[in-house]
Length: 236
Image 1 (cartoon, rainbow, N blue to C red):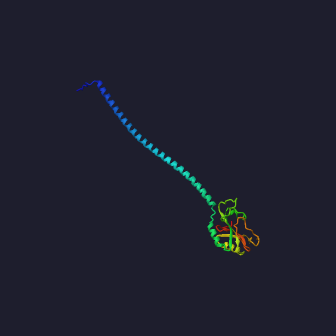
Image 2: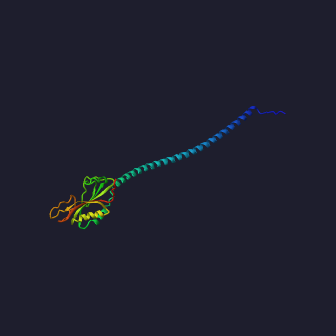
Image 3: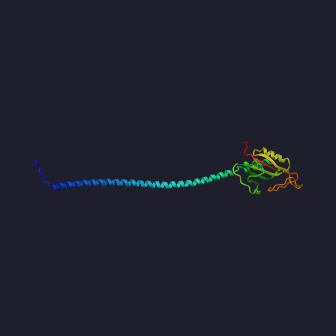
């Protein structure tokens, strides 16, 4: 039996068109939802990236500040190291108090020292024995000689003792005592003779800058030169 379709063609086309439009709307809604989800996700990721970039920027600023401070401290440290090296070169490593204490033990009561000099000499000045190559540590009231350069690096301390002795035999005894002391070496008398007193002038007169000492006839004036025993000479 044949079925008869009483629906008009325009009705069927209209229905198909509505169905097609509905599918398009559904597809557009799905695309819109996908785009919204992608936009939300992208915005979140962009916010996280911006926050991380801001954090890295803060870290960069802090790192630059630390590098700048490190550079400043490095410059100061290098300057302090240079000053420390200069101070170490200028330090003669001479204990003046210990030297004076040893001299007070060695020098007899019959000897009066007019002047005590502690002179710094470079080791390369050993051949020039008549020239003083450094400043002197003198007794109070003694003026330091002008025009003396300050030696740098390792130096040896030259001790010059000037004074008078009650007897002529006291000078060799002082030389022996100095030579036997562990503080001194290369002890030698520079000069000694009768001091200038009321009885008349002797062969040796007090040197310039020496302290004034009342002397009598028969007393002996002397000058003894030695070196501190804080170094050792070795043959090359």
